[in-house]
Image (cartoon, rainbow, N blue to C red; front, side, top):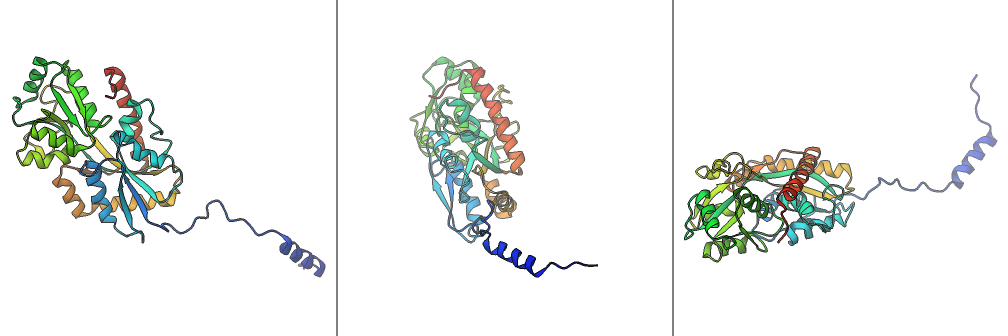
Length: 330
């Protein structure tokens, strides 16, 4: 026999429902995303590798989200100023950046006062690209090989300088590692971005520069600078005639520039997945691949977990390099 509720029970239940407060929205309820323009922070000056790669990828994404993606240069402190914007905006779903070896692999272990944690304060989403650095000299500088360059440094201790796009950058540290490996006093001259460093090297204000391949390549191809060595284990296809540091007799000078895509900590998983998909699609686009290849960049293929693991490993590696070499920011 099926027992039906009495009329009194039904009325009591109805009254209880009417008296109950409206359910509060769940914590996961969020407005539609994106509901305003997305800020893409480029934490280096215009004309550098971060700027070039960011604008290539951002242009491909365009308005696929239904909102514009606005690139915004916020340079300073080896990329730390731009990164700190994200670190101080946990959960901001409309703020992203191009993270890098400088801002998330070197700066946090080189500087004692880096204002963020490179892992805890970010949601790392995708590796965008990798490429070597290149040591190049002014055409009037009397060195055509790394050995000849080191000989010049030894002959004039503390007088031969090399420029880079700033303190705490990978190019800064590669030069310091070379000096340590060669046992010479090679003086670093930090600039506020690559453009100024290149200008002074080409004009002879400083004799040498350690620069990212995508930025140096046009000047090398144009015959305005002389390349001596590149920093990865193998020669890049775009500069195949130039030896690596290992081939030049300095196997300890090995480093890869990497740039990736990151958001603040606390961004919802569905937005992370959407960004990962869109950035991955951009990096697989033939036009983007062609533009990357033209400047010596290999597209990245790491998603969130792998990219986060890469950053963790780089922090460990450069912490040991800085400690062993007693390297300090200039």
